[in-house]
Length: 195
Image (cartoon, rainbow, N blue to C red; front, side, top):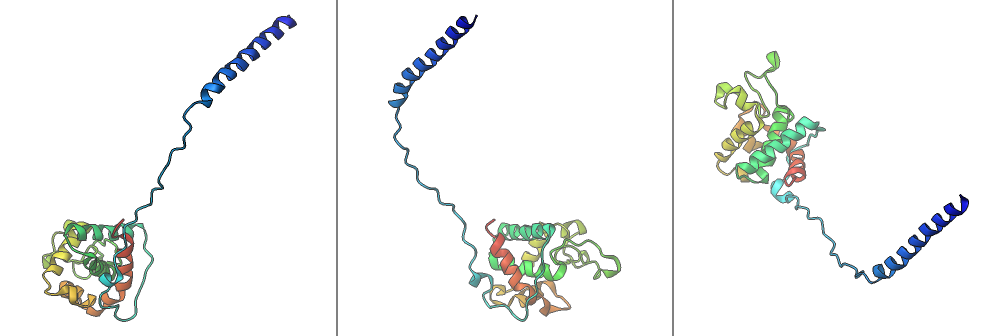
């Protein structure tokens, strides 16, 4: 029995050797010319120019808050609505700074006793002042579009300091408070405009 097993093993080994000999030369003649590849450069969209984002420089001391996922999503929604409205990065800075002041970029519903009249949403717009229904002004795209529509009607808003442009649209009791958010708003637009 041992000799039959040994003969079988030798036969298998012989086949493997013969297969290797025959396959070896065939494989040796295969085309092994190296393929030339060109490295692919990662294309990164340029960040908006700081001069476009803050053309007049910031006014006064600046505030900054850390943003959670909801606030980042609202930031991106404001930027998307600004682009959809055909407006530039500066309009997004004014919008985001305004929303930072009004709601800290949180889509606020009715706050009960703490509510400023019937103000709601990112921009604290009021249904009673004609900004839209509660459902509309708590929709980030709608409320941003409504704010931008007001901004477009401000003659020369592009050449105004941010706080004056925002105040002309918002008519706030605290008109100078928008200025404190200009740097963070510009940083957010620089970060998310091309994302």
